[in-house]
Length: 102
Image (cartoon, rainbow, N blue to C red; front, top):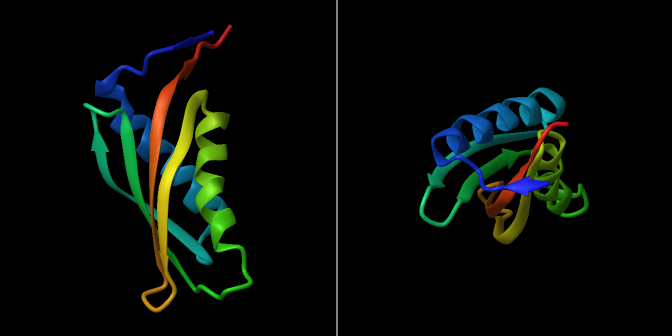
């Protein structure tokens, strides 16, 4: 069953998942939390790394959504932008709820 994310915990959860993400993917991809918006239940992230056009940068973005799901957070990727010259991507995820652990 999905319930609303307690906003006071959203930043903590987002940062925990970022740490897991980075442990698995660094140094190729590094993710940092830019902002957690309590009003819209959204998380804005920056991903940096050694980008190339065929290395699956899109996958690096979606991987954060998968890591959120592993921690019981239902989120959708709302928007993203990749800047290959700066070797960074900015992505916005909207949190829909959390899965209660049975």
